[in-house]
Image (tube, rainbow, N blue to C red; front, side, top):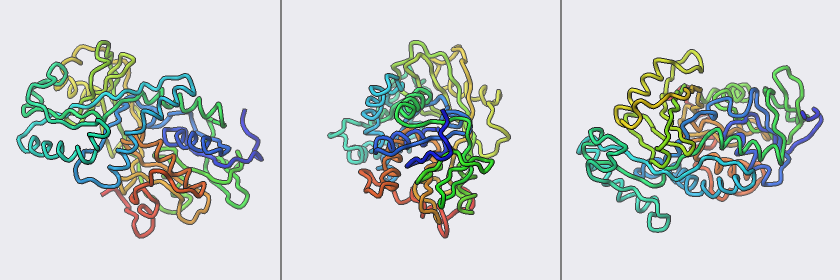
Length: 386
């Protein structure tokens, strides 16, 4: 049932993708009365993809962004298991590990250095997460040895998740403890009256705070609210193949593509990155390209049936890093978008930090300064991705 326009919430969230639903969960757990709106349905944007690669940044040139992602990936499994217990729904999570081919002697030497640094950055003795260089021919029953003439990296921090199952479980949690409304597009917020307004200017609820998520479309609403354009969309495409018998294999990253086996007997291949696009529909030519490139380094995929293809527009801030926090000029309007390819791995810590900010508390894991709104707006703003 839709709320009455006079219903008052502590937090209203515009967008039911991974950031929006994760923030809703954190808000509910913090005791805040919460409503989530989506102009279409849960996962209608780029969050509704198929890849599910939870892959860490390389353990080199360490910085706060990499540390934040490391902390997020380290604690995600515990969060997922709790969510699964609470909702009775699986999220398709597994610590699958990742294979990276080494194609030149320079890369071999570089990754040997990274392997040493990983022991410090990933706290290997404490966490058990390792980043190891293995000799040529290693794991060639999965990654073609010809694709890795100088050996491979095998790291154990990487994981996988089913994006759609994770979203479905989060949505169930929100429906059980809050309000989730699909088919309603939030277009504005009146701080004087606390009105959350739809595209017709009608009040759909009242809220003390509004959080704008909503993927790449959030940049339109953020621009209306602030007068500044801080991001854009970038199209990605992926394939889903029959993967029976491959469920326990590691993820592979090769030739700019991920191959990610999933527990349900599928294998996801992706994804492309197109700055110029006409629509958000899958391209047959792109699908053919993805399959050809993937089977070239992963022969086990040859002859497997294509189950579906997917395309979506991912949010990318001009400053590359996600945008999280209070919007300039607004006391009670916040944003969380621009996660691009790492959203599923960091959404829970983004949510924790944002709800802490809304509640006037200190987050357990603070946001990197480059995620903060000051980094994206005003004198620091980029007019285009450089």
